[in-house]
Image (spheres, rainbow, N blue to C red):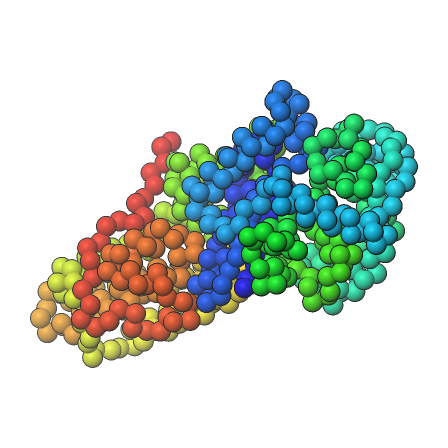
Length: 516
Ligand code: ME8
């Protein structure tokens, strides 16, 4: 089973375009795994506890549970609208999750992995963590990335993270704890050099933060939000659970935790593997991380203070959910930052979907209807250009599969578009509309149209993880709904049977006209 998760989002507002990118990327990868013949289990959800949630609730003057529930609904509604089809939904206020976190804390406490100590120091309210001297910048200050920094003195519980640092270095270096893209691994190794001697504060006194999971062995404290949140990946996968949950042994280790670059270090690359190691997970049971970049706005970070937050719900309303899906996984190169650009969204859609693929499907079907009565004939006619088309399809399919294996959705979609462009060039060169006027060219006409229609069938299967609804429409127009059941490994030439009657074309990708 291919077990894939995303980060769980803070529902302290409405979901933004960065949240949407991550969920869509993960959905596309999960759908592609299924297309490639795997079983896949996709878990996502919301991270409802923590100081950020408590602060937002205080600012808005609402109960924090009410805030969490209200905003969680916005996330669920958006994922439905965007076709993000998850199998499991993780809400950290769920009883089963709280129970799992408390069981783990009890076990670690019993085994001497946790200790209590008093600490006085600087604390970043934004990052919800204590700062050390190493966190000061060259000017000797705590930089703006830490937000408001206050001085605190309090007793807390600590996890002996430093005891696992050597081990972590080994598994990062050996690749047993996988981090992709590979350049991110160095970032982790560098961070480990800096942080190897510090333990992790895993509690917050209740008089400061009440919105969290109570420590089972010291009820004056709640659990630090990251310690709670990371556990979602196992609690909702059935770890040590009696409830009606997935079979943990079938899911774990996670094949992929899809996360943004800001939560790689220290949370996912340091805390999480060390927590798993302390719980007794072996090297073979370590998950793999897929780290994506950030979506920025004109080179700037998206933030409510800059007022430049892009709302994916409004974009889906205006341009369609699948237009947004296509744009995000086509334009953003995995691992890299990208600038969100609505003009580019429209251009990519109009060029690659409306003009290239839409045009190919339309002309292939309408000409087949008009000149062959919609019946795809087995024709003996062949020539170099048709052989080149078949080679182009084979090459594009291979490039698509290879790119998708490394989660490079952008390269995969470029590979598909290359074949679509070839097909449109093939139509221009072979002019089926001219061939149809000459009875002696009947065999060539049938062959040319077959090559075009067959290409539409292949492309509509390969593109289906990204634009599932549009591809289902193409399958229906081809009158081949069974294409939805095809695996990428079944895509040999001849998906369209000889003698098959195709349906009428109806534009699947209408052009977007942007008003000035
Ligand atoms: O970090 N572009 O929640 P979150 C791309 N609750 N991705 C972005 C982004 C942007 N502009 N902004 C945020 C949290 N993200 C924790 C996670 S996991 C156990 C707990 C990504 O709502 C970010 O990198 O701040 C993260 O992967 C996800 O959105 C949720 O961010």
